[in-house]
Length: 267
Figure 1: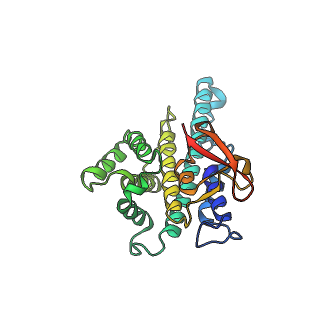
Figure 2: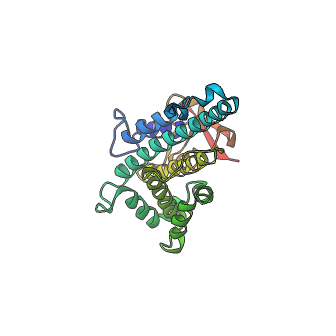
Figure 3: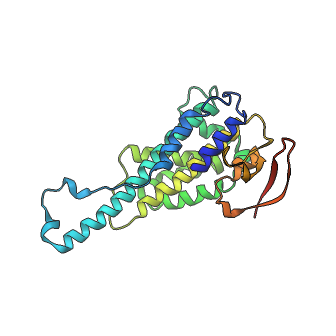
């Protein structure tokens, strides 16, 4: 999330979006939501707050159970908050990336139709298709989601990026309509949030990439860390979700602007 925030800001500073100049906050609804999602550092939730039996004061086993419930609820609440901010960023990205496309459709449907039409390009976002398959597998462990997701490929015949867009739409509706039960005895419900949030971020990367007006070299990862070098804007957005350990700097050489330009490649 932090890398995506920095990427958008760096591209905006380099004036790679026709909608924004370098004095604007580029993609504001996207970067503001990403900043909030990435800023979550700690959270505490206590499900026993609503109970008036005070069992934890009198029974050691009950107290232990309440402690476990607090840990699970805290992790669940943090995952839910992160997902909600990522969803807000996704909807904002659709509005900016596709202002006049499929105007009669709701935002998630517009994204699905765009991703279906541009599947070959969207699949160049590294790991998008694999991340969709993982999220589908994880979400498929929940009965309602399993039945809805089965329709994505069988009834609607969606695949690749379009299927990923439909998955995140289905999951968001599942959450908003109160179909997700609170975690009990397992942190597994959090994994659904983690896997779907990753897909959301990858979809945002493509929605941003399709509005880049110039794919030439841009300061990579952060305008404040020029020592990280430069990379082509399209390669930058397709790979920025990899950890730094996945990258190696090679063949550093002076750029035409007088800086050292680092060529990056993925190992």
